[in-house]
Length: 187
Image (tube, rainbow, N blue to C red):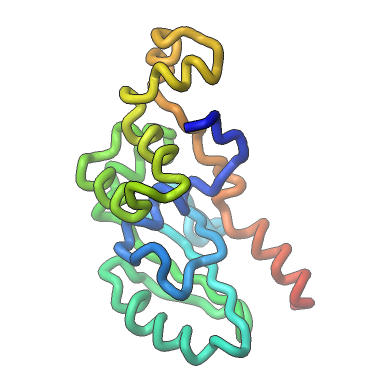
């Protein structure tokens, strides 16, 4: 690692989306993921919401992808059309409820081994982000690096216990992004 990753990133996209079992690099990837959607799907209820944005050239291909990969997922709950080209898919991650609760508290290193393995498998060993993800899931191997980056002692860092910030529950809520999207689409 060359340094700290300082920008906020959508924690649900990194720590929850890989649990769906959809391979990285597949043709259709959600433009964003969320853990809540206003009051309809409140956080802490084990939901993952994926926003897909299509264009007229790939709409038919997406329909097939949706049927095969999304709607046949063991976690699939339902989906909603925002308009012709924008859709949200809701997944229930109840089988991961203990890890989901840890996710909400920013305790990524406390995930079960199975969950960590799924996340690491998704990102692979050689992707540009895999070392960061590994450091968040297994901080004990990175205390020295992060202590140097932050100019603090390893012992102080170990007291904190995590190397990744908490999820921002406002940014992890679809409502704000959906309002922006609706304005852009004049809905």
